[in-house]
Image (cartoon, rainbow, N blue to C red; front, side):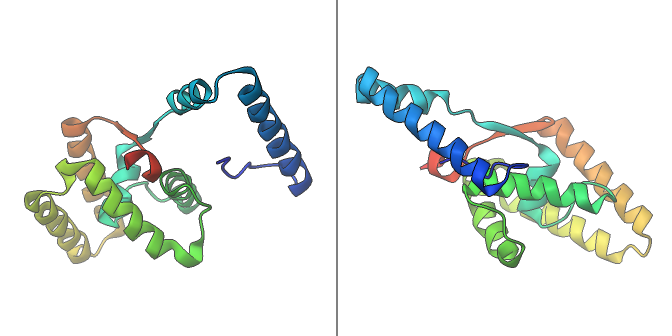
Length: 163
């Protein structure tokens, strides 16, 4: 599946898709179909995303700082990649829930009762904090601790590659 192609008109997108589809058909003719399919599957990369992005979807907290546009783009890009469908703000909660369950399956270290309790305590602390600046510091410090434990990025698979 070709994801959303940003910055092109609908006509240009159709032409790009046609070109890619023509190339794929050409490869089927040139090579053994099984060989081609195996090669394409191996060529698909698993994308690395920042731990902050992954944890934002898992926890429902936003760990990106004050730039709302940047936050939305990172979450949108992540959800589109993992779910393999276009982002829809109307379905954001459903997309986040579906993605969260797959992420917990893919990264079981975040699915433990201890980690769930840690997230609950973090949310309580943030909710009890009156200052937005202090809440931001609490979240930044927590993410820094998580990065020290798990690394700055996680190689994330799409849902269809996890099955």
